[in-house]
Structure formats: structure tokens, C-alpha cells
Length: 312
Image (cartoon, rainbow, N blue to C red; front, side, top):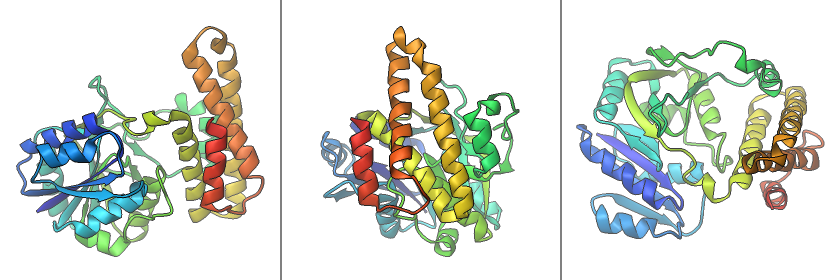
């Protein structure tokens, strides 16, 4: 049996579409929705329209990782699928993924091909970040380099996008649950790195497909979530890399946001979208400079206070 775990926060419309798409999966499933104190009627709609779904209602927003762990502890399946609330699972997707996991003893995690709402490919595989990749990103050289993952064939990958991944229970028991220090973003990087470190391979399966709308929860506070993403990536570097590498990452991140802010300055005179992106990069750059003058890790409470200050 497969246990499908969906973490939701104020994404009612997307969540109901996601649940509707799961009706067409052939594998025996249990569906667990972990709601992070939504105020948009999400849990009430699930209870009303999907009584067969196990609904867990948190009293506060506990973050993505902690909510996934709550769902994992409640799950009974031999396979656990972590699916974002803004994902539509296409027919036979779960069946293809489970069949692959069952046939490959050394593979502990798989993910499908992800399409955007326009049906175009949404890249969902990435390499583990290095100072080289961060430099290329900061200077836009990555746009000139060929993509490492072509998303057209089955192959082992470093990292799968956290919007949709399926894992073996045995692998999860070896690797451990999601690191709850990651509130939102960055947890997929950490999760995948720990799978590889524990000897479990990760594979991308293009024959399985899903649609990811994206931004269901982050659209509620886009600037804050943009800074949260930066904070989570820094948290990943602090956990897995040396202090020297962290300093290099901070410098390259600041360079990246400074160049983005400058690049949007002129278009911002004419376009609101450019003004928003410029403000977003300026807010992120300010957060980087104010909260990370050195590599000592401030408390998450103080970091989040700074995120709120810079997001206004």
C-alpha cells in the first residue's frame, strides 16, 4: 500500500484539485492531509468532500518538514508519497513510480516528470549546490551552460524537487525523518543528500507525470517566502559544508541579489513586475547583510524576525 501525504496551508482550491486527481490511481492508497492551521476553509472542505481522507489539523503552522513527519508517523504504507497541495497527479503516475521502486532494491526515492500549468516541462532535478554552481548562478553563466539533466530518460539524480517524491519505508527508516529545522524550502536538498549518504539511490522517472501549479502557499506572502528560501539554502550550507564554504556562499548570494536588483532597476521605471522583483532582491540582500555578517548561526526566532522586517 502507498500512503500519500499532503501538507497544506491556505491552498483550498489547489488541494481539492489534488485530491480529485488521486481518485484515478490504481494502487491501494491511503491519503493523509496535514493541514497547517489554514484559515481559508481547507480542512472543512476536505472533511466534507473527502471523508475517506485522514485529516490531521495542526493548531498552528508547523512548517513543511514537521507536518510531513506528522503524516509519516500516521502512515501505514510500505511506500510514502510526499505530494504538494498544488500538484495534480496524472493517471498511472503512482503505479509507474511504485513499480520502479519495487523492481530496484538499491533505489530509495523516485520522482516523476513535472509539468507546469501550461503543460511545459518544469525542471525538477538538480545537482547538489557547490561554490561553482553558485558563482554561475550569480553571474548568469548557468544560462549559457547545457542543462545537466535532460528530463527525458530514467537516470539517477542528486536532488528531486520536493513537490513530489515517493520513498520506500525501509529507506526512510534508514535515513530518518525530515529535518524539522527546515521550516519551508531547503528540506528537499537536505533530505536527498541524506538518502545518498545512507547508500540509497534517487531516480527520476519521466514516464510518470504530474502537473505542479506552484506558489499555492508562497503566493500568500511572496517576498517573505523569497527570503525564507534564501534562509533555508543558507541553513543547508551551514549543516553540510565548512565555515569557509559558507562564507563563500554568502558572498555569492549577496552578489547574485545585488546584480538582480541592478538589472531590474531600469525596467522598474516602466513595469510593476520589474519593480516587485527589484524590491524582492533588495529585501533579500538587506537580510543577507544584516543577519549574516559572519557564519555564526543566529536563532531561528531572530532570523524570522528579520525576515518579517525585510518583507514589509
